[in-house]
Length: 491
Image (cartoon, rainbow, N blue to C red; front, top):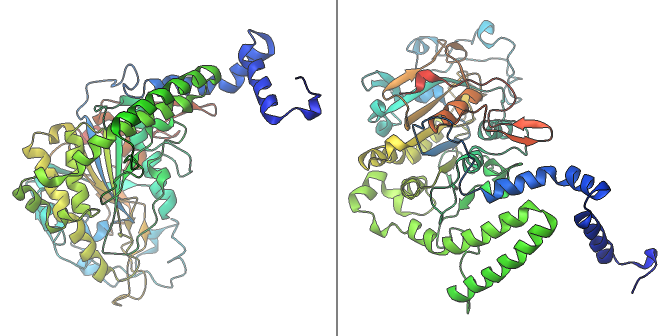
């Protein structure tokens, strides 16, 4: 029945609008579809190729196939852990010269301090490995892998607060809404295992600052890329992925039959509307079905020999700990996961650094070193790039009264340290130099854009050519400003 326009239901109007747009062969309908759905159709094509990646990638011979990013959320103190200058022992307690601090921004937590006294490292350091890299006594296991690792002392960022800084290093922008590194790798390179997502994420809470800085799912999100590329977070315990198990009374066969029918319906709707998210939804349903088998097998550590468990440390059997997540990370790349990212909270030592930092280091030291050794003994390290670092470092000056048990260090983005291992990176190497206060860069700066460009290069990707058109821009992981591959880091 044809109703007057003012009596027509919303559903009828929607159907008429869709029918008009989808059935028009030219004129207004075609123009509207072109304007409204141009990027959507592009996204659908990308979504359909999500498992294979983009044709032409890698752009050149890759040094690595996977990345394990051990992200230390909160800002580890490079002053206390890696970037030691013996002269700081003599400078302890003296005022940081104005010429060193200059006009650089300081956070609101210390900007009103009347004094900025230099605080030397609280713990001893020693030279390690053939290159003689300084590493703190708080990291005895890391000291032993110095010859496998490249330390970059001059990573830098403009961001001075946690959320913009961690967003910046993970997505290439301080603004929300951009795609994460793992999403870019999934989009560009596709998956190496049809039964697991290309990008998996795990979180752990350290014993330093507890609770640590909040972490949001957008840090492993897809941004403007098709949503099939977003990271999948694994939770500790019996249900690593929510809603993965079949409800009572539903068998695997009946679930498969249901998904088959649902796929057929969704395919018809995708053809009719051109909505790229329908294709993504189909892929998500199918992946979830396959993960019902692959995830329990992945997270079951019963087949790990005792000497491997001992290597990762006593916490490895406790789900959700950093040690357990490191072992799972090895199992993931073993099974072809493209990127694994561990976020470990608790490095924000504004207060009580002498109490908090040793505990935080103890959380990660043994397991981080064990991961590198484990990958190497299995022949996986040459294909796996391991990254250890946070969003910025800490100040050489004290936050709070010097000598107070409550004192700590503020955020410092002008220079901080990151270490890399495997995947085409030089072994036993140190790059970049800071001033005697570990405050400014003296030579070989590595902006976080440069770091990300270098990580992509290890996987055979030219960061300038991994792009996605969105809002009139060629979006990239390295953002819109200049970025350079640090070739000196590459083996």
